Length: 392
Ligand SMILES: [Zn+2]
Ligand SMILES: [Zn+2]
Image (cartoon, rainbow, N blue to C red):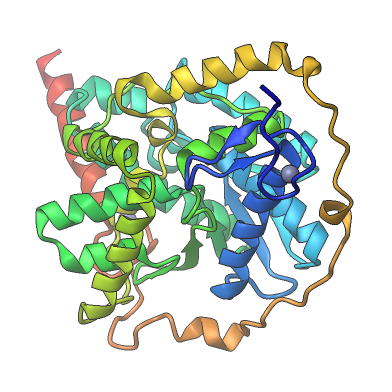
């Protein structure tokens, strides 16, 4: 049987069956299509302005590694004019985050980007290991989510950067849509679908350029681009509800590949019908905070993603036997397209005038409440620690 030819170029042998639509593509065409789709997401939603400084929330996992690689490629190819830096949060989880941060350090060198690491211990006086030691594993993701969100904000502020991009993919967004639908929380559902989120508690914007990219395609992209990433999942298991929503989505994807994007689109449609859409999220914004954590990166039902990664690794060994494919000239051509300009002034309109940017009376961090959420959680933790000390 002759090898299947790439649907797009009709010249090279197809090596990828796209999880999104089952198109059979050669390596070059798959990489090009993936990058073009992210470029389309960026330009159609006017995500950046020329000259903007952007911090990439980097965990060392596949999502943020692919995000950094693709943004670097697109920034150079299309002349976005972005100043990209890596921003990592060290939650203080031994055997997990310390190892993944080593990956980020290598990425910083590979992509020639500067790297800033902010640690929970310096910011809050607690590492996640200590938090789990105190409160147990149950509910620890809530603490981690709130702390991470603020840590990324604070890191961005230290760098004087007002835009943080995260590696949330279509699966993450679909999962959050489903969770909020099941909880009947339409306003949070609406916020979770927008590509760019402002926040009443911060003047740092967040966006998700990989919002329409399938998790499986991100793994394939990382594999075919030979990216250096960390694939171990967080040692502290995520909440059961999120895990269940995730399994549900993976099962739906099996019988209907478009299900993930369908859920994302449905979420967007529902958001349009929801009053107050796009208004600043509350500080916790659980859906987002947790979705961005490292545990979400490798977490899938039935270890499906690990199996896929193992298969890809085995496949690499036989890759030299395949048709040699030269770099497609189109993909190298720098067609400099000016970004649709989103002015600095436009940015300000994302802050709802009815909400006031106050400061936490405790830590001085921007907050819509008198005590910020992180401080509230820290108070509980510190009380627990004090009680434990009395017992001892
Ligand atoms: Zn092709
Ligand atoms: Zn505070």
